[in-house]
Length: 327
Ligand SMILES: NC(=O)c1ccc[n+]([C@@H]2O[C@H](COP(=O)([O-])OP(=O)(O)OC[C@H]3O[C@@H](n4cnc5c(N)ncnc54)[C@H](OP(=O)(O)O)[C@@H]3O)[C@@H](O)[C@H]2O)c1
Image 1 (cartoon, helix red, strand yellow):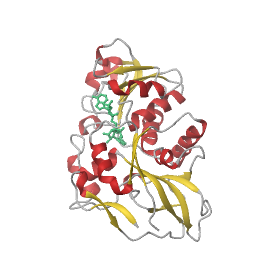
Image 2 (tube, protein in one colour):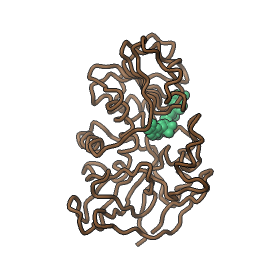
Image 3 (cartoon, helix red, strand yellow):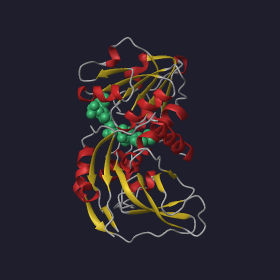
């Protein structure tokens, strides 16, 4: 099969189309022909080893000491089941599915196997393959931080830094679903988008420093690594939570965080993903409460160009790779 492959760490040009053996489904696995996948910030980090401050030492042990352990990137996909293992009962050949492989990657290819009880579900019928491929990356991180970590409640006020990005644009919609009042921080060009996906208010970070405004929030979600507690603690209400999707090692270790007497919490770490999360995202997509934002699409053989665009750090939602099988 064709796949976008990288054999060494580096700039987007290390990614090139190549041939690898097509996988086959074992007893409890399904084989998916991929129609669409995404190039995410996880792909950028795994390819370039660009890591948040303090995490550089962990990068090679995680991704491969001398060269990438997994030469095919891509954390999410949408496609069609083309073969099932002998013991599979949950899926049938011909079903349309979406799936999340996360840190196991492997979606920038024509085919991918998944365990039938893994992070894979039927594709919402009202979503194209491109939209369905973009459900998981931002959606699962937004859910993890807002719900599992942040315990978001109806009526709360939420400030989302980086509201036009993949995680941010999912977070705006998911926070609204949970009944929160949402303010999105983004650049001038993205104010309209962030309003359209449901933000009650927007702040243009190029024109206004939100940290000097008087508004206070129950939750602040930072997807940009620009808002440590020292910069925004005074904006948190009593009981307020700072959720750090993009943080340094110091913030993850709690250095510079709130004192116990402040009544605030600073919550960071790596998002955990469950099938229940995927089911909720599918349900929200079906009801129209969550529509993944797609910035642009590239064919698989132009994956390096897609990487170059993602590297700029200013995409709106997701960048999609469309996959057409060669036979
Ligand atoms: N903790 C976890 O488990 C986890 C999981 C996945 C990803 N992450 C991390 O989360 C971060 C965000 O990921 P993503 O996929 O959402 O990235 P993304 O799609 O590239 O979005 C980044 C957003 O940041 C905005 N931005 C850049 N500078 C800004 C600033 N100074 N103020 C406000 N917004 C700014 C950009 O908007 P403009 O174009 O408007 O500037 C862009 O929309 C990445 O560092 C990623 O590694 C963490």
